[in-house]
Length: 260
Image 1 (spheres, rainbow, N blue to C red):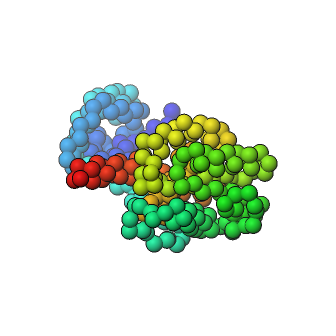
Image 2: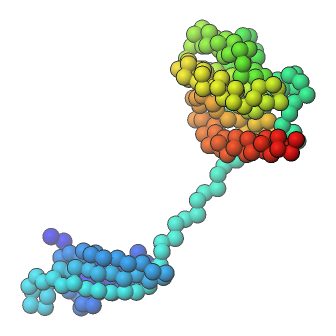
Image 3: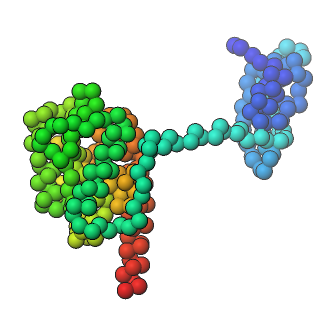
């Protein structure tokens, strides 16, 4: 059995910020030290220990030892700052609403294009979707939808059919505005559409992504994440904030209705 000395245990305690010394001769060999009770108070610690050791006569003995002293809480290293969502950012909008459907499509196009190009994709010339991007041999097919309605679902089904033809190695995305009330679709109906089609689209590996109405740099995932790790990390971060963004939006809408 490997034994340590009292002095070595005292040093080990100090290294952990526990400034309590065993009241025994420093060169005595310890068989075991068991903490029976530990009480913290601001800047201090109290310990009740069961100490088994070899005494001066070479015999094994044990006794209860009480000690107290300063306690220095271990300082954890500061967390690393999060990397920015993108290398470069688009300017935010000043309003939640849109003038017409063409403005919506242009906004969605700019937001998803900027994200994918920021992550190393290039705009391709593939026909069959509103947008097509490629990075090495991996494609990213994108359809744009103004609302989560029947027309939006038709756009999603086009992606399902395209995936059957092009294969599972690529990513497929339906991009919509995050909030569509100003476009005639209440949030409850938008969320009902997502809930109704979420399982089907997830199984078919069709991502539904909502672009924040005011910040084109924040796009939320409503179904699945893309396969590339850089995009997956991006959507994991943005989507974590979606419940807070949604809650703030609902509160603001409720306040506007009360004022009217």
